[in-house]
Length: 349
Image (cartoon, rainbow, N blue to C red; front, side, top):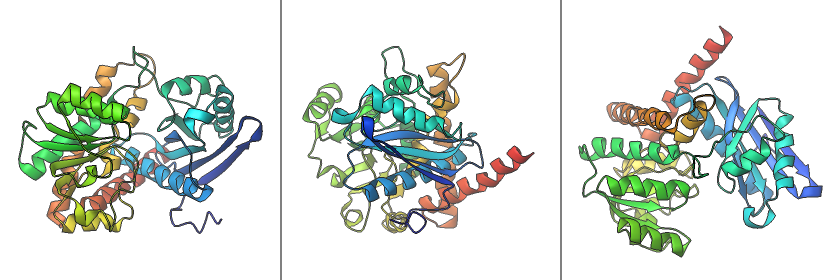
């Protein structure tokens, strides 16, 4: 397998393969860009079907983190790590500490946090061997709802630009994925008066959403094609491609799932269909904003207030894309890239 020749290798600075057979650890750390600061990105644990799939995921995710930090003007670069394994079966304190030791060898070039398959409690274990692991639990032991709140702000921006609405009362939102982010997002949407259609691979989560929010539940295979004002993907990525885009029955897309577009050309396909796309790396930036606030005096309420600027960033992207008649996906990338040079220049000064 050639890393330099991989389709998703886009000027990455460093890719590290980690192997610790004694604890069953096989992992990959990818650092994409550090022009604005140390690379930051979560550690995902997933039973990938192949090593090639794991490499593709970590390359795409790390690049997305670069753009996420740049568009929000935070002092971080982009990185990501993946552990190949089933978190329900293979994750142990010994494995987590071994992963922490691997991160420690990078001497601060990469800062990790929780992601799909890992938790803030896992980060506490990892911090016993390296300081370069972020993520603080709230009073109940859960991560700050910053990511979900940021997506909610993105949905408010989407409703304003696409529908001319200042509220969500009576609007329909189809939510794919009821994990930590998706379920909390439903709570915000329900409180704002939205009508929900939801789906998850876990029947108990769908039943809970139906009971708490009056949500209509549909099968996981149907949620992308549910008729709704806004579709919110909050599970895994690459859900929009040549097969799915023609079947969409929404008017806009705004969700936290990383890398929702299978290819960059799929952003153009959404644009041509008249479906407003809120770029995922923009609206899911709440988690990164949360990390930027960690330290003495950390206050979750202040974090959520800071996440509200995601609404303004999304509106700026929508308006510029409309003026230039460009897909929002391309406009967002260009606006983020304009900040790469700014960050690099300030660090050099």
